Amino acid sequence: MKNIVCCFLLIVALSSCALGVITTNYSMSKGKLDIPQKETYTVVYRAGFDEHLTADVAYTNERGKQTELKEVNGAWDKTVTLKSGTHVQLKTLAIAKKEAKGEYKILVDGKVVSEYVLREKRLNYTVEFDLP
Image (cartoon, rainbow, N blue to C red; front, side, top):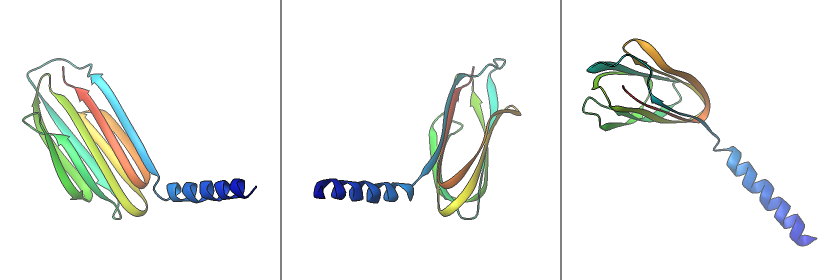
């Protein structure tokens, strides 16, 4: 009986710890976009972080490589021109001391490819796709 009580208390304690670090996730792999093929595309990455959020951001740059930024907050916007066939990815991990909101949007040649809003203390957003 003593072991059962100890196990129960351990489970309650561990579950309480886990609740303190809840992460809201959004991850989407869209594959190859269904848009007309051309030589280059204008990709716009946008993220808006509540005042309580600080984020690490990684995005596909003009050379088709990942660029990483640390401690981004507020409104963030980046426009790049990418070649046909490029694998595009935006990854963010935002952390706050209390629940906050992150808003995300990716556009290709002015057309919205992804748009999402996350709320929690930890926000993990990842979207990837291939340009035709």
